[in-house]
Length: 180
Image (cartoon, rainbow, N blue to C red):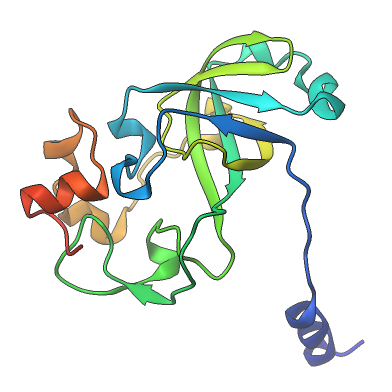
């Protein structure tokens, strides 16, 4: 099959995932939800649906998890926008972590505190209550850590100034540190 034909087939494909669980958190409003878990000490739980609970075997031996989830309350799709931390210019959606994406898939690294059956107690939660989770992966330092990382436009922002408080879109707007 020719490359162009393969591209056409892929571009027209519909990809469907089933949620494997649901997030329970204190965050109910996007405007008041931290923009990154690293800025937020809040805890929550991940309820893994019973039919997937056996897949949690041995997960309790990890301190951190990577969660992939569906931004079920995104308000549209954008290709460029001004990111929460940079009021200066629009950026391509693939160089920022905003929820209004062509495919509204979220990614968070959370702390894992305990596992009780199909319930995971997690920390550094930046996810809305009721969000469907589509996958869980263990964070493995040897695989996931990188040295000499370039952070693009983020290196020129003030993340060091907000690391000690819950940086939400609403909070950033109040301080004048965002374009919202």
